[in-house]
Length: 138
Image (cartoon, rainbow, N blue to C red; front, side, top):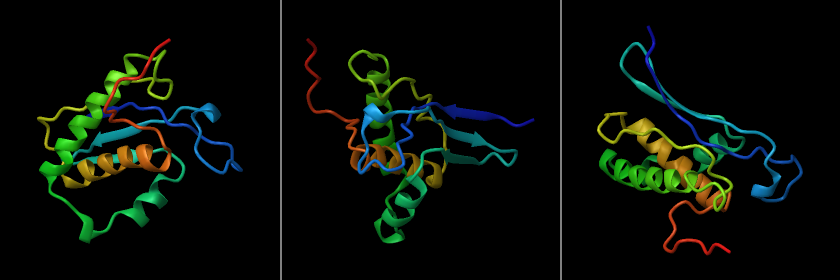
């Protein structure tokens, strides 16, 4: 039987001719899937248009970091993401929480790809995940 760990996150699908990412143009929801196969290995599948191309052009072996580096950042990103998901009125992009267990050894490929997805949302889409100050609510 196949065991799976799913990390649920929402990503906008954008209007094809839109010049930049805008959370107001959300048309559908996607998932990040971290799946455990029969060989006890994990794999990250991102269903977000543009991520794979961005990842292929952004990451290189020369820029690679350790598993501990990626794990540390992923814990921070997941905590911030889940906080924002628990406040949907304030943070519209973050609708679902991510079930990420820092005690699980996902392997460097999973940790790296998850880290780079967070960076993609932050830099390419312009949606900050790690804030230095909380948002102002009116």
